[in-house]
Structure formats: C-alpha cells, structure tokens
Image (cartoon, rainbow, N blue to C red; front, side, top):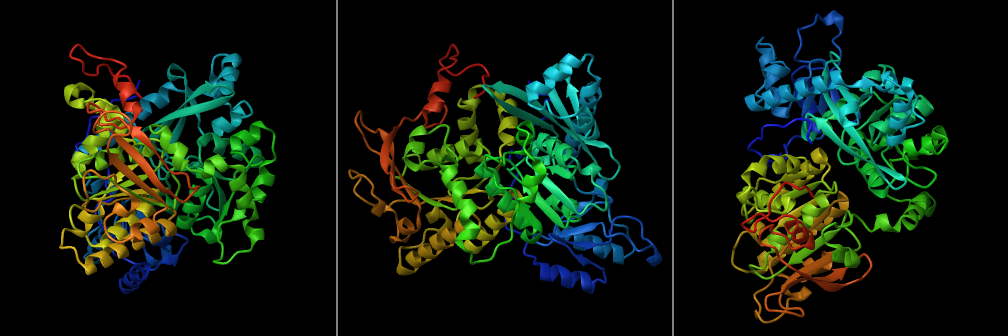
Length: 623
C-alpha cells in the first residue's frame, strides 16, 4: 500500500504555463550591469550575490549564492533557498533599491494547500526516517546479509551505507534514502526502494515523499566538499554508493534517473569543472546523458557509453570490473559539426550490438504496432490521420499514454479539445475503467496518474507557430520532453478558407516540426485531418490534408481506418503506410472498449478481471 495518502489537488497535472519566458542571457547580463549587481559567468547559470539575506558590508565580499539560469532567467539562492522566475528576480531588485528586504523562501505566494501538503510530506518522511534503522544495526548479521542479497548490493560495505545515511525500513522491506536540505541539513524528504527478484535479475520499485514532481534531491550532495571540482552523476542511489565505494570520487544520484534533470538542480552542479554522466546500461540512458550534457554545458561533460564491459556502476561492482578504468574511458560530450568515422566508431558498434534498444521504446498495449514500427524512437516525426469521428484523439491519447507509463516524458498540445476533457479520457484509459461509477477510487488513480511525466500546453484553438515552438522548446529544457503530441494541425492553424497561402503555411509548419524533432532529438506525433473524400473509400497516404509535404517529411504515417477488415461493419483497424526505420508496413485490427475508452486488448482484458453486480468493473486491482 501507499506510505501516505495525499489530499488531492484540483490541478491534476503540472503545466508548462503557456509560452516560454522571452528573456535571453544577453538581456539578463545587461540588466544586472544596469542595476550595479556584480556577477560571474558559470556553465549553466550566472552567479551573483544573494538579494534575499541581510545586507553585508562591502568589505565582507558577499558570497555569490544567487544562481540565474541562462536559458530561462529563473533563479535559486542556495543560501536561503529562495527561488522564482525572471520577473520575480526583477521585483526583488526593485524592492532592494527601495530599502525593502526581499521576501524569503517562506514568504512567497505558495498556495496554502500546497504549503500544507509539503508540511504533511515532511512530517510523514520524518516518522518513517525515525522508524528506519541503519543496515549495520539490524538485530542479527544474517538479516543484514539476506537484505543486501535481496537488493543485489552484497559488495556494499556497511560503512558506505552509513556514510550516505541509508537506512532500512523492516516493515516495508524497503531501503530508505534521505533528502537533506543543503542549508541546514534538515530532512526534506525520502525515497523508498523495494526490491523484487525476477529470475536472475533484481527489479526495483520506488516511492518518494514528497511526490515525484516536488522531489528534487541530489542524493549525496551533503558529502560534496567546497573544493571538489569533479563529480559523477548516476541514475540511481545504489549506483552512486557502488561508484563512490569503488573509486572514492564524489558521486550524486539524480532524483528520477535518466527521465529528467530539473533545471532547479543546475546551481548545485555549477562548482564542478568536470561532470561525468554514467546514468545506466541501456540506450535510453545514453540518449538521456547526451540530452543532459546540453543543459550542463557539453564542454565540461564526459559520458560513459553503455556496453557489456561498461554496465551500470552497481553491476560493474558486482562483476568485479575496474570502475576507475571505465570512468577514464568516458567520452567527451562536446563534439564538432564534422566528425570522422573513427569518432563515430564506438557509437556505430553500440547501435549494432543493441539493435533491439535502437528500435526504440516498445508499446505495452499495442504489440502489433511493435511488429511493424519496431518501437518509438526519438528524433522522428509521425503523421497520424483518420476519418472524422473515428476516434483519432482517443486512440492517440492511449498510444501516447502507453509510452508515458514507461517513462517517456510527454507534452500534449491539444488544440481541438480542452485539457480537462483530454485528461479525463487519459485517466479512464490509465485506470481501464469508468471512474464515474466508482468515485471512491478516483483519488487513488489520480494520485498514480499524477506521477506520470505528462504535461499539457495551455493553448486552445488557433495559435501562432512560433509561440507553440517556443513553448515546446521551454518544455524540453524544463521537463526533458522526448515526445510531443500535436492534435491537430488544422485546429492549430484555424479554419480559414482553403487557399494557396494556407497550403504554404501548412508546409512551413510541418517543416518547422520536422526540424524541431531533429534538433531536439524529440519525437513529434502530428494529427492531421484527411481530405474530404468518398466515405466508401479507404484512406491512403495521399488522403492526408494539404500538399504531399507532410507525408514526405514524416518518418511514419499511421492511418486509423474505420472500415471492416474481415468481419462485421464498422470494424476499425490501424494501418502503418510508411515506416522509414525499416520499411515494414501493414494493418492490424482494433477493438474499441467504451467502458475504458481503449483500443487495445489491454483495456479489454483488464475490464474482464472483475465485474460488479451491474456488469461494471469492480474492485481496485492495479495494472
């Protein structure tokens, strides 16, 4: 069961909040100079004296603890933990000039409910922390050995676990990793890790207090010295422990592994001249390493490329490999526009050796789609079409939800239906049941849905393409988005009369999305209405509205056909009519379940698990 039940907030999902802030690093520098604020240029941030503490005499030489993000203008003061956007910082400067002290971190405009929730999470974390014991203090050595074996951490010494403050919660059979505030070492949260043996491998499930979107711990940060100039970022706390024990180098674990590097953590990484990213042992970790290196400044980053002799640190320790040697072989992240094959050689070998992973993230709900497309890959453009009323939005929301539940950070741009209705569809598909009939289960499913890396653009109706692309760029930086769904192209453009100008505008938009996908190694799924055609005819690639540019630019073309395939009228099926990855095309049938709003057999099989007296789905079994 859950460690703590949280009161549900009305704003189900965090949103990027409209367009990206229009501020450049040049403007930020110009403003600071005009205000007489000294600053230094860092890797990802500008460093300045804090505006949030007491005024220090000039002789004291105030420490540069205010970090201003070069990309967004957001700031964090590591001395007081005050944070906010660029406009908040300008307001603080104005107050300072008037002799009014800028508000501290607790005097901001946090909603009362949000503040109460944060307090509850801290209190829950404190209670769990007090009940947990250091592994070395368990009553008998046999239990300690068995626990270490269950988590696959037999080589980790008790001293290493103690140094990082790791404890064990016997009641939940969970390892407990603390999150201490950098300012006063107060406990701000926890991560609980539960291990499950699956054959020879160990799989882990984790839960955090506070919830994931507010959990921004850099595990190991209290152990970093002020003079440390190098650090290794790992994808898990266990990897950080293994790596530090084997090499003695400063190690930090990212809060959500290879999923996201929140910009709010960048100020804590500014002191390091060299950052090595060793996030895991699969291709997704490798792709994430390259993405994160862009935020951290590639010139100071090195990446450990996954391979059989370079697995994740914990496995390397278990196999007795030389971790120092692996670190020394890390590849520089910064590269020039032109490279020789010698520089690409290792990456080509990696792609050949990991062909399954190169094919992309597999769909759990649509195995037939995996057979044709092989997987969902970054940097591609998928065009999706289907007849009016065939269920395009419903299908594409399940298609995207499937990937999102596997850690693919997803941004939705729904221009046709509003976000509340879209979130309701996706929540129903996630729970695979009609929650209207079981409102007592709503909080449980909504809490789990809220943990997904899913975000929505707040636009509706016609939008300027530049505003949309700026928002997408902002979301990629803030949330490490790797999949953007745009539903749909015509609504985004509005409903003007068909004209040559409109076709040219559509071509420009498709080209802009294609370039965005390539430049940001981000997959874009673009929904386009078909042309007006005879209802009796099946749709073709040529049926996509507009000129041929959309289908030419697309890596994949998917068509939702609302026709009988072999049986019965109105049978829907999905056609893959273009697949640039390996050329496989084909069709497979879909069966729609009205109760769960799903097109996959996943929804159908789950709905049959338990039936209430009225024939509705009962119980609270989890997928």
